[in-house]
Each structure stands twice: as C-alpha cells, then as structure tokens.
Length: 267
Image (cartoon, rainbow, N blue to C red):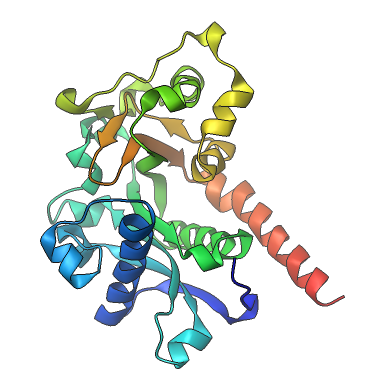
C-alpha cells in the first residue's frame, strides 16, 4: 500500500458537480477495474460509475487536500447517502431493485440508505474508514436519522463459498419481522444454507467482509434473503443499523482511535 500523509485527509459532503464526478471515478476504479464489475457502454466510455440516483443523493467524501490543490483525483473514499424524505420525492431507494422495502414504512422517523461505499486501494486502512464513519455519524445527527440501511456485499456469486457467513447472519442477526426488508421473490436466495448447529462461527467470520463485521459490532441486523448481483459480481444482503449505536458507542470508539493515532504521531 502506498504511504500517505493522514494529516492531508478531510471529510465532507460533495459541494459541486466535479466533487460528484471525482467520487464516480473512484467508484469506477474500485468496482469495475478492481472488482470485475461489468459496466454498460455509457459507464465504460465515461470511466465513471453513475446512475439515476446520483443526482439526488448526498455524497460523503474523504478527500486528499494536497491532491485537490494539485488538480489530481482527490476523492479517496466515498459513501452515497439517500434520506427517505428525499427518496419519496424522486424514484425511491436504490435497494428497491433487489429488496422489498415496504416494511420499512413501519420504522418511525427519518431513515437513510447507504451505498456505493469504496476506498482507494492506496488509502485502505483505519484512517479513511475513521473519517467516513465520523462523517456518517455527523450526518445522522444533523438530519435526525434513526435508522440506516443498504445493500452490503460479499465479493463473488458462489454462495457455497460463503455458506457459513450467510447462515450465521440469518440465524443470529435477523432484523425484526415488522420492519425487515426481504429479497424480491424473483431474486431471492436462501441464506440458511446450514442449520444453526452446523455453523462454525470462526469460519463464518473469516468469510465475512470487514465492513459487514463492522456493522455487526454496532448492532447491525440483516433482512430476509440474499440477492446475486451478476453485474457487480457480488452477493448482497440488506443490512440495517439503528443509529443510536453509531452516534454513541461507535463514534466514541473511532474518535478514541483517532486520538490514539495522533498521540502516537506526536511522541
């Protein structure tokens, strides 16, 4: 991994069209060039990952300030954020292409969909994720959000290779039925590939992407069924987190980590 100066990193929402385009270029680099997703012609020609939702989402960015000053691609981490109050005025949520979200109507207050999360391969590590999570925590507070959710992805489409993890999530971390999303019938993949007593918890955690494990640590729960996304070469689950855990315990955890890193740098 390329060394970078953590002091040059900052987090903010996209302010301009160029900010959004920079995030889209990073997404293209990570999803299509790095993970083997298959772009349509317009996306391939532009070398930017974009869709109809980008125009009305908020885009959270971690930027390298020095690169921005130098006129280089400066977005090194990003999340796409879509509040329910905004989605209702447009075409709804991106996740509705894979999951029936109708039961989320039973969850009170503002909710937000998180998606298109990625980090520049040269910047992967604790520093960028700390900033992304700090940005999300601030966004949650500023917009009075009570629940965040979105598609969380396993790399690959061979569910047998992730059978322990999928089964573990379904048996141990299912969302309450009254507000649980469910994979659309024509895309539904059963997650209970193993019986509860057959699951090796250590193997399940080995199979699980770090981001999903991070959500579980703050009380994340999973909707019913998974979805195979052949374009992005992933297996998707719908993950939900009540935000009190994020703005409280998890934010304190990351802020403490940040303080520790700063203290170590100054000694």
